Length: 125
Image 1 (cartoon, rainbow, N blue to C red):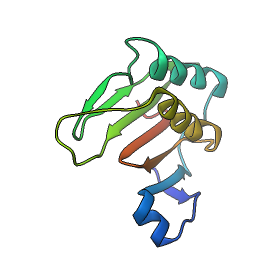
Image 2: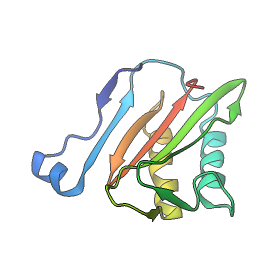
Image 3: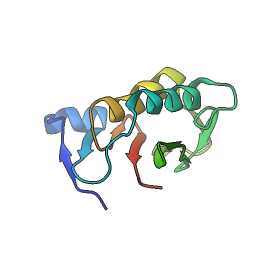
Image 4: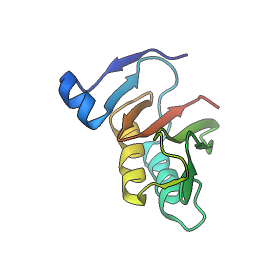
């Protein structure tokens, strides 16, 4: 398990209201090619039939592990909302949140925002 360092320090009131947490991994593999990783995310979040498009059941995690320069890149999106039934994640939100983990974290990271968990982790699969 990778250790995390906190990137965003928000007040406890803001955390309670917006349900936000984020952190970068401080150990493990680095992104072999950030541009290629971003392309994987754009396709998975926006293309019809993409890995992260469509609806999510309560607690459901969708994941993919494309390869870049021989290294598996783990991408995950999880629905953390307590609602029964189906939830749909906005394509643009999916893209931005996963790209944040690539752009802002040399070794990947994860964030939880408004009932969704986003994880991007090079070398984790």
